[in-house]
View 1: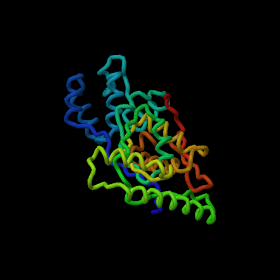
View 2: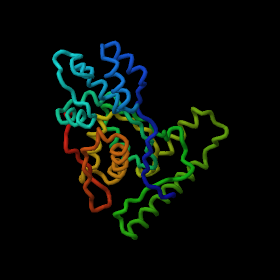
View 3: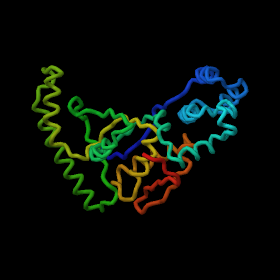
View 4: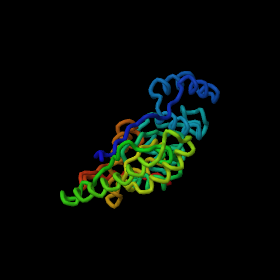
Length: 264
């Protein structure tokens, strides 16, 4: 058994193409001054796409473009504060972030897949993958004797798995046959077996899931995962997550709650 801990790595995100945004601004009638100012003061990440999408609803790229709009919020921080506080969560769905979540148990992934709206999941398949080693996270709250008992139980399960595995003539089998046997013998592996997955979510969903899954009542392992996701989002998307406040919890994790709540 190899002891592991959950690790989260951001591997992808929505980006915009500035030249395409410029074409859109020209098509809707924005002045060259307004277009140059917007493109010159915004980056290419998902925050820009969200703001751009929100502004098209009112054509609020500059005062007067829409005769009903005589002034606009030019500071993106002010713009996002207003959007989130008003509950205009739909425009947050335009942008998504992809994470590699490594060394988490199937206990955590069973909970994670309950968040279906606005997400995509691709998880390591134990129908196809025979684990060369058993990776396992032992909860920190266990005392030394309890840890030893859990290690013993995992070792027994792994021993039984290896004995079954050794009885199968893998080299003589087709992939379909291997899949069927791999699926059959995995059933004795513990639910705490570590797995890897790619998880993608839009920012509306992320704000909600971070709050829910870092709550003090959440399972500690999934809180460890979303502590890392929260830190990444606060660092990389300050306009979208700058209102989140962290509270230290007794087990060393944190609870993140937004000051502003969008409607979900």
